[in-house]
Amino acid sequence: MIDKAHLIYFSPTRTTQQIVEQIAVGLGVQQIEQHDLTLAENGIDLQVDDGIAIIGVPVYAGRVPEVCLTRMQSLASSGAPAVLVALYGNREFEDALVELNDVVYAKGFLVAAAGAFIGEHSYSTPEQPIAAGRPDAMDLDRAKAFGQAIAAKLHAGGPLTAPTIPGNIPYKDRVPLGGVAPETDKDLCTLCGTCAKVCPTLVVEVDEEVVTAAESCVMCCACVKECPEQARTMNHPRVQERRALLIQNCSRRKEPETFLE
Ligand SMILES: Cc1cc2nc3c(=O)[nH]c(=O)nc-3n(C[C@H](O)[C@H](O)[C@H](O)COP(=O)(O)O)c2cc1C
Ligand code: SF4
Ligand code: SF4
Image 1: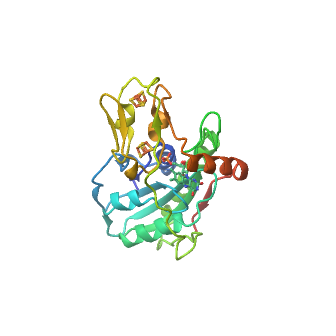
Image 2: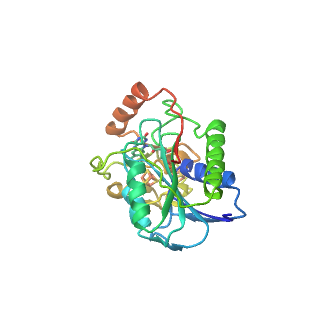
Image 3: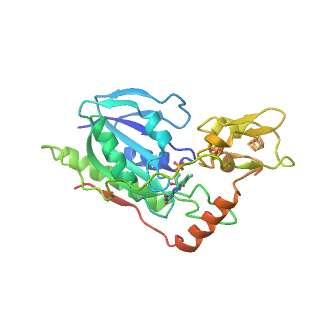
């Protein structure tokens, strides 16, 4: 019987976190330890030898974001079971789950199950919604049921079988980030500082004005979605073009997929 879950996730707009937490609810563990990598600039130093780890990342261009890999560098285990979660914005998860599987296996975990879930796309806006409001109640129910199915697999005993996870090896080429960042409307901004507090790469400074060092922006849009005055917008032409394509090609609702066998 597993009684402890380590929730390990990077989640600037909190959709990955919601799914990871619901899986833990379904697992029915007594104890939950949160290891939020989102604002952990120096990553986490964690050896997991008890309980189960639920490890969640958003999908960026079909891959695990580089910032997640860096922040998980000092994560290790000597054989604890792990559940993998790739959270994507209703386009595709491509090679992210298979990449996460390789990374987590190399750290010494035994992967028990994996799931691809859908969350509101980082580039979604009220005017141009993409998977807006997801994960919704149905997604959260699916995550909880997934947790229950994992608990049943673990309670069945015997050697833990690794699930078959879709994706290509070698993975698709990484799309480099950096150079594109949200802008601030000075007329709306009250210099409240929220955008700086939620930025996972600490590239926003709020003093007499808001200054963003675009080179290290990962385009997560946490600052846009959390700004209480709607003063931050991500409207670079490259993002506008991408947004239009996503609305055109990826508006049909996708459903979560889980891999246990
Ligand atoms: C740079 C970047 C690349 C992305 N690439 C993809 C993608 O390849 N496929 C997809 O469906 N969603 C993609 N998304 C959307 C995120 O995966 C999605 O919004 C996710 O819910 C964000 O997770 P979070 O709420 O935990 O931050 C991308 C988002 C960003 C910022
Ligand atoms: S969160 Fe919005 S209002 Fe607050 S400082 Fe940033 S841009 Fe200005
Ligand atoms: S500045 Fe870039 S990295 Fe920071 S919160 Fe905004 S979009 Fe994310």
